[in-house]
Figure 1 (cartoon, rainbow, N blue to C red):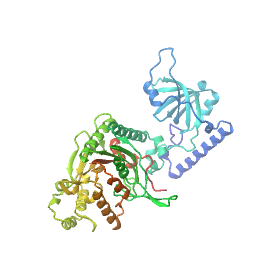
Figure 2 (spheres, one colour):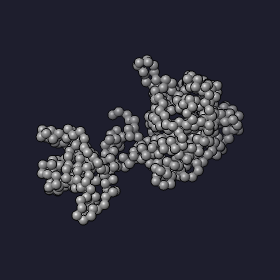
Figure 3 (cartoon, rainbow, N blue to C red):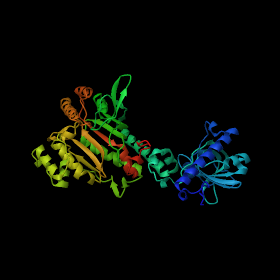
Figure 4 (cartoon, rainbow, N blue to C red):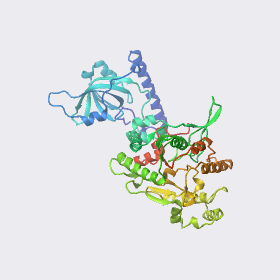
Length: 511
């Protein structure tokens, strides 16, 4: 039987399911027995409370210079997970993986001592170890640590998978992300990039005079978006509450209060379907700026994405996404929804006299609609069916019908439409923005219509938010607002086509 060069165990691909299960159980039993022996000998690894770590793999390798003849090399104290071990009599090699990368350890009996070396030879792949020693370059040219001390800091009681990508159940990567991160450096890279992208977004908004704030996650009324909420119950107050579906309404209260530029990066929760671009909890960035409109939001959004894209990609903001190249450097296209529908279908909605005519056309096209739908709703259905998937390069779609835009100002030139845009890239929505509705009388009418829809069975419609209306009655300045899907933006810049690959712990059905 073939042997794994890393730990001397049979290669998993050469075992059937029963053999693999038996081997796994045997390995677990051996590791637990080793732990018992260590504890009996007074060497319990879990007694360690700290380790004086002062160096990391990537920095050590990048900063290494060969010492002058006769001079000692750099002394380091490192810690991490042992990912391989090659025992060769009185000297051995092992790979140490820390949060930055991997470095080789050279462990000699004469250097660490006979008993510690004997202990080291019983270490398992996946164990957490600490090592002290001198950095040097091997004859093969590999930068390594010549260990003077090596200590077992924590025992891994479960063996790591040898061929992680070869597992038949790919969902196990998401269910046990902690293992995925250990054995798959590319996965760890994506999440480091995610952190960097969000930090870059923060720097961008901070540099443009915006103040970051935090608003409630528990709401007494779901609002700010068309979505089905999660409902919970507050025992002390004895009331039902909702996990927020949007950040919007509290942020606009702050604009009323005199904060002219605010933003929040936070989690939203929507009790809806799941697919490669949707998760029940997700991260949004929303900002509001007084004395501007949706045109200002377009300019800000385009500049932010281009700036952050350049930083994330280390040059031009051009990313390979699946089979296509997405260019954030070129000016984003700007086109109205009705113009786009006319371009793709030949249908001029302005030429259709009323709702009945639009519904008749929808029937001809085989588009399903509800009895409550109005002309604007049907226009949106045409857009979703014939246009959305074809928007590959960044495109601002403007002029949404008032029926589907309860929080946006009407277009003064055509009150059937609103000053709103959505940004589409690669067929998906990335941002949604308005010239925010600040007329409390108009807003009440819109809310009341939403309440009517809710009573008619639309579980995504919002109700009347009296406190928000009260805030508007104190006066909110002309304001532009935008929401950007952070997860999707990260997907784009990291080249990931599934939202699960940019969420550390995506929502999964329990086994």
